[in-house]
Length: 227
Length: 385
Image 1 (cartoon, rainbow over the protein chains, first blue to last red):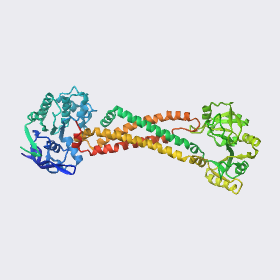
Image 2 (image 1 turned 90 degrees about the horizontal axis):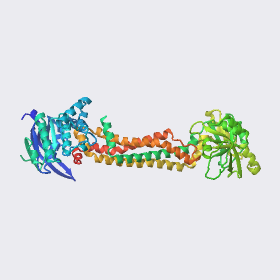
Image 3 (image 1 turned 180 degrees about the vertical axis):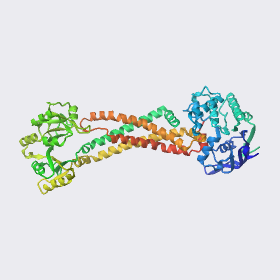
Image 4 (image 1 turned 120 degrees about the vertical axis):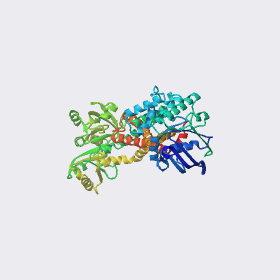
């Protein structure tokens, strides 16, 4: 597949952690290409390295060695400030526990990433309105996270993730804290983001049911891709 | 704008914790202001001294009196504009706890040397006509309810016996910092009475206050006065009024230093409390800081949030503390009567309060901001949930 069609290109990626003076290998020689517009589920037992791989792709952690290109950028070559700018422009985050700012309303939480773009207030307002409408929360704009259900909070988080129109959405156990109905709702929404907006989605999950919604399934075990 | 909104909402997030911290700051800033004002009050005599006034006393001790005939010799020196005798009286009004300064003075030259004591002309005339007359300061009059025409009985300690004075004038200060807690009466009356009661102590003066015509010659005239009386029965020491007053303060300097130290210890304690509050706050919000970093916000934004919150809390406590310092200082001054002749919260005290609060606000945020800036996103995110 040509590089230009790849959202993620990983070659011989290695990552280990240092704990108590010991080196604990987490990922060993990972090689993986993910096409733009793909919806990938990363599965594996606890400690298999799937969240670590997701964090490396999202640019919030750094590998020990190997090659890692995301959206055409060698993100290993970026310094911290450049990496922060790159994340703001290219990656949308969906967390298991939503990670919304509790003192901000739904509207303000979704608006947050736009503060880094230099957009004017009116443009920001329009975009936030569209995003909240897309996730079905246009009637909850002034609600604080504590006034929303778990499913609604995750919808706000999805709206926040897509507000800057990033190429990639990374989701770490996005349904892990939700009941079955809300989980289905969120997975449906992510499918829409993938199919209608063409977002590349990389999702870590334990849940086989959730993984079935992805088009591509990758298994990790003990830091190695097993299929 | 968004940063300010976030700072404000974060500040009000734990209302009880914020309220208690603000209260702590309020008490610390108020205490600091009051203690600094006590120190200022200690130095008020020196601060109110005029540069053209010298004080001549015995070179041995203030307890050793000077012969009154020195007055004419000092007055005759080149550059001396006027000379006035003054004796510390130390009488007791009703009870020993009712302390206020009393001086027997050469009324005309002395009062002319202190234009900051504002006396109505008719009252001044009455005082000069009455050998048993007295001039009292407004603060003293208010404290004990003295009115013009009242007789004030004093029990002598240095000059034994009962002494009755009639209040003939009440003086006001030219500024709020002028000492209006004093009691003046005629040196001639004291001397005549002493001549009758204890003739060997007559014609003696505690100090001479000397006014010079040319400020630049003050040092030269001081030397000339002391040279004139060198090798005489009582040698003199002449210094500026300010140096003379500071000499008094120095006798109790250890107390002043202790008060200063305590005032800064109070600030240090509140710094520790604030630092603890901010450290707790930042630790609880590490997942939020990690999320903000993941979204692309840099250490500067996180630092702004933490420093902003710390400064907002410090500002709230400080503004309330400074505002309360004035009425509490007024109340304190009233309770102290004439112990502190001048008890005014100075501009420099308020500036010190603000500076201390700024230091507390910034210092309390240094470590939490540094930690937030350095937190690895993946580690911070683990704190969520």
